[in-house]
Image (cartoon, rainbow, N blue to C red; front, side):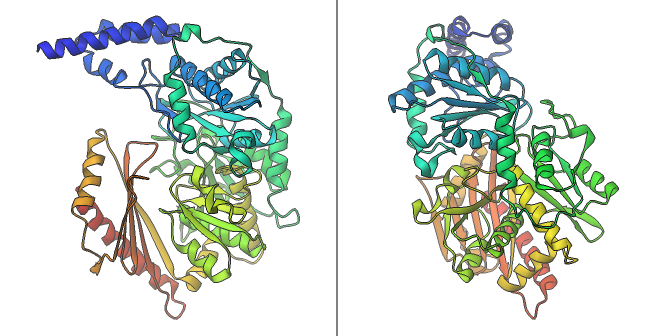
Length: 554
């Protein structure tokens, strides 16, 4: 009991020091209420002070709450001060470009970042309103920023927020201009953040320059240029931004490109940080696109599209028999790649180790360079190491980069435009996206992918499962010997198992408390019978899912 009392006293003292330095009255009141609740509130207080949010290659991301283990004005002030210190130490002289979404706290965090930058003598350029993440990535390149900050938690739950950092050409080189940071920049920024002293000594300057709508117009113009100006445009599209910031930019891009304005799900059209109509604001979550499908049905849409809340991801929903189904990220990825190849776009095509192997097969057959990276667009946009210009990259988690010279990150707006271009062209032939998928299957075999995803409350569940798969690796999968086991430690916490027809990639999520296993089975198509091959592949993946779940003990 004495030890417990000592621990509480230590954390109480940490909290008091935090309160003395916290610049936000509301945050101070929140933490004071937790302190007043001791000893009953001891577990909550301990969690808030379990350690600082770590600045990694995805920046910061965590729950909105007072204390170092949360997203709040104090943490953001410290992060901004560390970032501008690191930029100065690298010799970067350009402006810091700052964007934000419509989540709770996003605008305040963006404005504080601008004040910290100008207080350190660095120009700060603030996007004019809550906008998609790809607009910020574009702005870093377009405006010659030394770096960019995007305040967003993407598709995380409503109580979260985050802080992503991009580098411009000055420090990232043309190869990484407008791309998310990678090591060792993340470690350098983290070290600079930890060296920041009392926040009362961080100078705050002017709010920076708020950019005009001409920046958004420029993004839309460049996005429109991604597709063929003379292609078909007869297409009815239903759309949802899932209470995020994508609607205005996407509808402007469709109008600029000459497409009919998409119908937008009415009660999801405007930004709302509470995300009231969905359990999780992620198109991949069950039920997230139910309202979109209802709109598509009622309007006779040819196609339905969803962006996640910061519009860097794009989900595509198609008619399938008498209903609708969402295409997997791998299906959209190969459709977009095939479309670009048919348009004669040559250069490097890239995806990640957890994505379908179909893109590799397509590139091999068509004589195009291909590369495979670790998960995350920070790696995809650097694929090939400069051996060939990147022209397309995708990850199975609904992220697509169809124009790396426009946005060097995943971009749900240009992806939606390109999907619409493909669908409109097929419609003139009386065909659909699923027809094109069948063509690819007939040529390269059915590459059926699925994902086993387990959300946990206790991260030790993930640690134990990864240890178990390494210690007790299955000798067979689907009755075939596992002929390849690849462990990517220490570079990445990933285990890859392969048989002659199956592949399993197991890893913890980088942004959420989830364990993920990515499954793929390849089934040959005999005599053009794609339907039978798909059925066999689906059954095999279902069996593989059960085997992997048992092996992980989840």
